[in-house]
Image (spheres, rainbow, N blue to C red):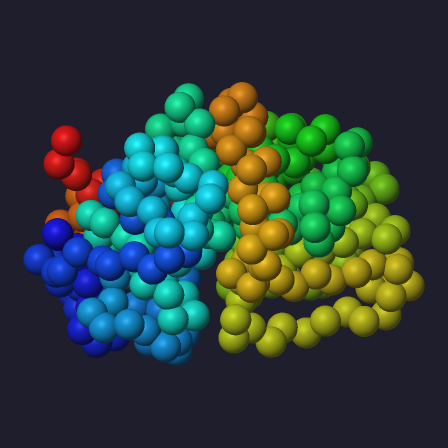
Length: 334
């Protein structure tokens, strides 16, 4: 089979493309012929070695994929050959990644894909959708009628948070870096969009909600705790899922006086039970159109290095070239 793979960590150019042996499945695994994958910031950190993990060699980068079941292990109960499926949480913690024409995945990380959802949309929504669901409902325990501020509403995770929050009956404020991105964010369900380059987030939030927001979702690598605590309502919750090396000052006094709470979480540490519950709800939301993929660029598997370079430029270089998720198509044989 063809795969995009690494023999050592490094820059995007370290990704090779070529022939590798087909994977052999274990008794608890599903063999998936992939149709589409996606790129996440964590993929670039693992590929570069910035986030050190035990990796199988050769290593296929990638957490997400969608495709069709080609074979199942003896112990697999939930799937049959021919089923449409999607997966996430691969390529991490010693697990092989997804950037290959065929992948062997433990059944506990595989989820059914409704016919109404395309492979590309499923791959684009996978990790970011589960991240949004866990953060909003497991961590922040968002309730209908509450107000959410999403910092970075046009990004991969941010666009999912905006859509899920709006679909659950919350009022959503989001930030964006341009008029074009602001229009997309409104399309996701945001009632108010703040152009953070020219507008004050705190002032705009106060105009929208005098009592403040109930949930702040921060996507930046350098969180602004002062502004977040300022705009939060009593018992507000702040969700953190980025900024691995950040150590910004924190306004302790205003934070505890308001009885606020801070929720840091890492999606790939969720249990299989937690992830499956979120995944099944995400599948339903995709089927009904409550959540739609935010695809900003598309590549073939042969161009995986270029896809990683684009993601890295957006994540580390703060480039405006990308608005949404990068999808990679494996172009499998019929």
